[in-house]
Length: 438
Image (cartoon, rainbow, N blue to C red):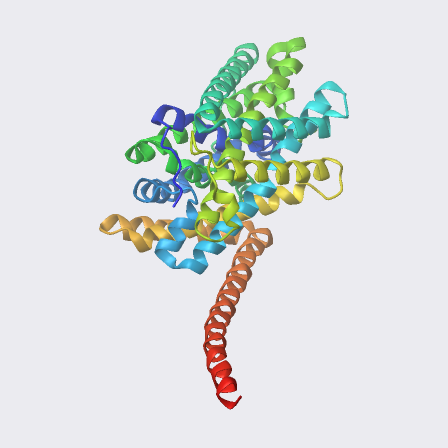
């Protein structure tokens, strides 16, 4: 069985995790939540950040003990059976195949609006996806080092922007009054997307030198993500009026304008390019590992499990993933289908996979933490599913239908496999009977 090279350390692994989590949600969701809830916008972010902790604990526990390229598909297969594992892998691939192009397209729209050059709406997604494919083809080590540089630059830019905005306009304290449950719930559902991505990080765990560092990677990336989102919200509170409509489409541009004046527009463009490039590079790497892992398990064509001899990089999977993502991004950028649908589908499937990971943890773990963490995860998953409404229900329905199809196909294949040898076994006897009669 082909294995990937263990070349990633804890430091680089943390930045790969950050690159995977920080994406288009960072460019839209802080502004959207502030526009709808004013300075009470911090409350859904705090709720989302707290509710995701037990789910991250499950994935950190699973990743440390079962590091595999197919991530949640492997966990589900070990804990819940091959049909659930195959279904989880298929839906994880679907989430990434829809989410990665949507992220690239968002960056293209941002840059087109910044520059006034409309062609960037489809040129940027094309360039960033082709570039991410070449980066993944160069190997996990090269991709990790690039992401370290991009995330450090992103952190420096966000810190400078928030500090400049607060220094120029003065701090504005967050509101303590709780908004209406309907308004809070709708924003919470959207904000939750900003805390998805750790399950995608799991697809790179097979390449980590030390799996015992995975919980620390999760903890460090979690703290840094919260700090970045907090800085953005405080900067918006201080410098931007919550009634501005641009908060729904380009909040970073508005914030950078207030912080840096004439330099705001180019500063925001650099921030967007760094964020999108880091996220797409990390996600393409992760998806190629998922495809490799599923092919190795027999869920996809065996050719996709081939690795390059000198560095064990699954180059066939990388090229296949890059081609598919680029085609989808170009079609979406040309408005041949609504790219917002990609976000909805991707976000819902991600949350379903969190639930699957929690179920796998509950099945595989032991001791008092198993019951306590499992119960909290169940409350979180059911609560968010109910609050989110039809879009989340649809995602669970997609999981159920896919699982049913996988089970039926497996049964049909087994019956066909049993029937075929029986037919073959009778053939020599028939020939022998014919010869005897002759």
